Image (tube, rainbow, N blue to C red; front, side, top):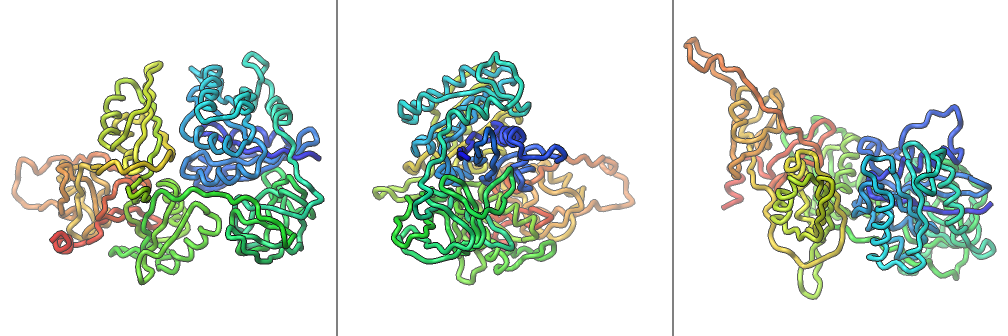
Length: 599
């Protein structure tokens, strides 16, 4: 049986996982009686909630006596390290592009990686049923992007096809009948070269991703480049420094539909999962030959952001969480390092009470924090900080490409806001009442910008960004013009107090919420921090007054999600995270401590 290996790459929300659903159904991955959920590959709880792919996943179907290994990749830039690695295991990539939005920042990022590896790229124009979709124009835009990214002449002659993934149909030409997804499967068989590899040579394989199983331990997923692999085989493992050690493979799995299935033997060209080597790592080479050369190293881009994870020290510590000590946090971070290759952890204090966690971006780190919170962890985190590099004696910082789509009348406000954050406009075009803006902006400038952007555009704009390069430091950025309303007392908030305080700024807490001294309960419009008493109730007397019967009318409370909270805090503030609550607090809880620190 021939094997074809493909990775499906796309910008977030262009319909990639929905297309994989259609391919799996057409390839007989599910029985007729099976109930199949939407976006079945997004199996993680957070993925289902957010509607995005966070982890790369493998699946396989059989069509026309050919096994097609499919890798579904993340669409968000923060999980780009997953995409970079899995591209090494495939022979071609299927680039999915929205027929209305066209190529977006993440499309550019993943396409660049594919072209650098010399992979053949198949273009799928999806969502052609959308109002105002322009499939032929988008094909031209994709061609322009190929040219811009330095594609070879062979790569520029890319094949393309049109689909509506939601309806499970594909067509070679726009006026072809819309019957099934089969034309796409034929298109893949015709254009993807069969996986080659010498099955008679000594076994060589390189893990591209890692998963963890409570019974089998660490599982390495990768492509068999040469030879054959079977359970019980003794192997040599070669690391990046060419050091060799030995191990034994206890289990070999191949993919069938979305399931991992036991395999007696797998051959060169197939994508497999192996268990039995507890210290296996991404990019190492597994081989049965003691003298074999290691495979080319997999380069992983360095982290761009760092945050401190600490033991919760607030007065409410230990009330809601199950795992509250530094030992628990350290063990959980070590477990995450088993599979999350883009992450790096260091001890940030001598007593091991705080850990510096490095990640690819804000979402990369908040997904980890949200996962810990749901598992019963209690911790506090600091403001995210960018990671700079010294190049030729000058400080360089990460710069991102941001693509923004807003109604015409709102573009001026957005341009002004981005200019204040050291953004540099690279492109601007207006079409059908919408303006498309392209900016180069420091990562620092985008931290905390999304919530302001939603207010500026009244929720009508879209903002996408991805890492572009390291460039010279662009100067200081003033991000938050408001101060904090800080509780000066511990107790339950009163509606009367909040009613009086709301004229000073937006509030983050509801009436009857337990607060403590030093906790941030809202914004102060004047820009300075203000200590207030949210626990004071109205004094009742037997004297009548003109304001005694005034109705209490509270403005809507600003609900703090984890992402909003992490974006919002300043350098002297923490986010306290428990399974039930997300609170903001000052590092120094009492006013006296804060005054002493200033002096």
